[in-house]
Length: 78
Image 1 (cartoon, rainbow, N blue to C red):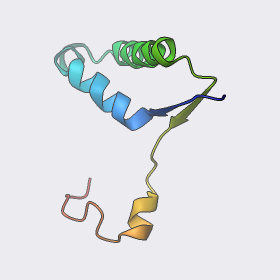
Image 2 (cartoon, helix red, strand yellow):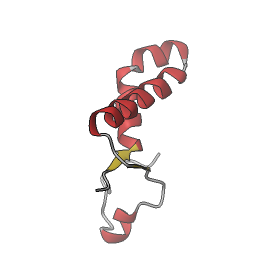
Image 3 (spheres, rainbow, N blue to C red):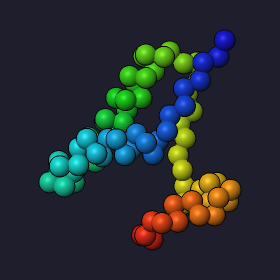
Image 4 (cartoon, rainbow, N blue to C red):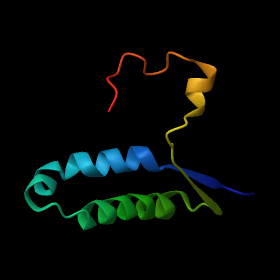
C-alpha cells in the first residue's frame, strides 16, 4: 500500500522562521531556517515511512481567492 507524506512548505517555513526569528534579525543567516525545515521533513520521513513525498507550496495566485473572493480580505496589502 502506498503511503504519501504531504508537506506544507509554507507552514514549515513559518515554523522555522518563528523558531529562529531572534538569530535571523541579528545574523540574517537563512541557512539555519533551511536546516530546521529539512530536519522537520526528515523527522516525518523517519516517523511515517512514506513511499511518496509531495511538497506543497502556495503562490500568489491562490485557488482560495477564486473560490472565495473575500479570502484574507481584511489583511493589508504588502
